[in-house]
Length: 141
Ligand SMILES: Nc1ncnc2c1ncn2[C@@H]1O[C@H](COP(=O)(O)OP(=O)(O)O)[C@@H](O)[C@H]1O
Ligand SMILES: [Mg+2]
Image 1 (spheres, rainbow, N blue to C red):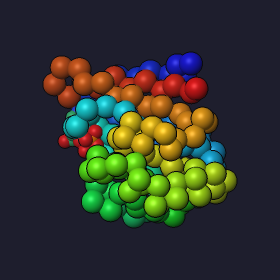
Image 2: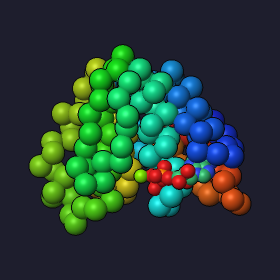
Image 3: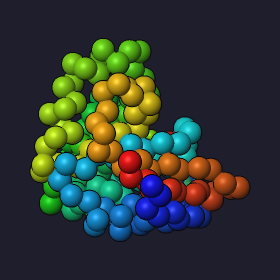
């Protein structure tokens, strides 16, 4: 079910939208960030973090796979672009993060660990339009 859709025209607007969207989130929410390379998934995650009251700078966890930040809730940011198999990710013990009632999780390239994802996820799809345009669609299962 589509909850909302928004078109943005800059990375800053995407971050602002994500920051506002973060106000609707609760502990235990898991967000799957979908879109091509350069769509704006990491910028969306930066906005989520800001909206959750994280002061630290959010950087892409491409090499670490997972970064954790403290705000009004814990913000767990994952990026599985570089994994070779979902077995690598199983070692992280994702369920411990997904079912943490004091944390929100956001996952880039979650498609690569499809079998490890929870039912209760929210999907945010970012589609590139012309130039800096992006269409952002938020859906709940
Ligand atoms: N409307 C927009 N929303 C998000 N990013 C945008 C937008 N317009 C241009 N950009 C640019 O697109 C790139 C998105 O990068 P990033 O967030 O790292 O993407 P991803 O994590 O999806 O690979 C950045 O260089 C950003 O400045
Ligand atoms: Mg990214």
